[in-house]
Length: 244
Image 1 (spheres, helix red, strand yellow):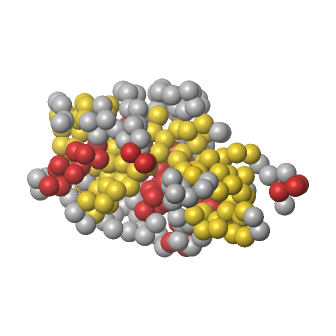
Image 2 (tube, one colour):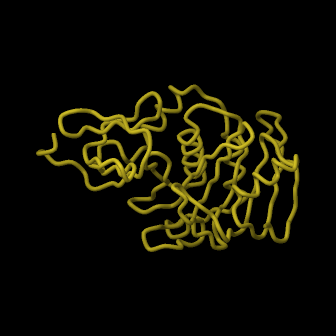
């Protein structure tokens, strides 16, 4: 359950004249969980944001623990239903950080990278006819060995600066526009990758050749191109001549 609540205040996006409410806490089990509680209680709706200084039970994809010490950006955005939500929110996060001076790339579907290290990630879930987009970004520290932070990359970014940039970018461009921009900053395309899907399916290893119009990863392996809707994507290496 949530601990000390800091404030709940309206925020105006001048470009769209939309008022959003920020529910801000010093500590939560998970911003995703709190967003569900607020929706159930009728205290949150589309456009609201849940923000925490730290999480005790943050989670990533596949139910994994998301280590969330103080010094990171942990937020859940309550969004309307939309197409390719993970890719849309991943691109918004990427663009917001770029405008704050940090160069990043996206690993399909929506991990954020600086070089080969993970800076952040996104988890999109459904609740009461809406999408909950959970966002975690390492700002001042990297909690795990294979991760990095904005400060380690030489860029100082505050929680409120990143929140403001993201709120100003949550717009409704067409799928074609979103995917075009996503492909241009996707570090996965052109890499040899391994996709781990489910226990009943063997892992697939091949060359990531693109992202489809529906946001699927296209992997060329064993003489054919496979459309990957989900799973764990690992970057193995850049291709050499024998892969072509």
